[in-house]
Image (cartoon, rainbow, N blue to C red; front, side, top):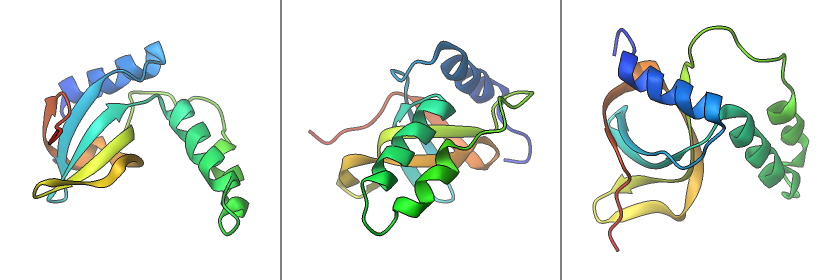
Length: 118
């Protein structure tokens, strides 16, 4: 998308301002379909940091996700998914949900709600 969808930017801004993680969204980006719940960036970063801290091999990367220079000015530029899956055929990868960061500018289609095969 050459210009980010203003409505999608508004959805992301509302998630950021309300610190809510209950907004379910499905997006198409780079030919992939990602479905899950949006989280505020700070919450997403903290969770990724926790996962990395618990890893014997990746623990040294945890600080990158907790280091912040303060809030950015302007509208959000990325969507931060947690409990998310990449949909492939009849399977969601990973089954338990993952953490994904998607550039709003790269979203070519989206809908409210997440998809499940259950």
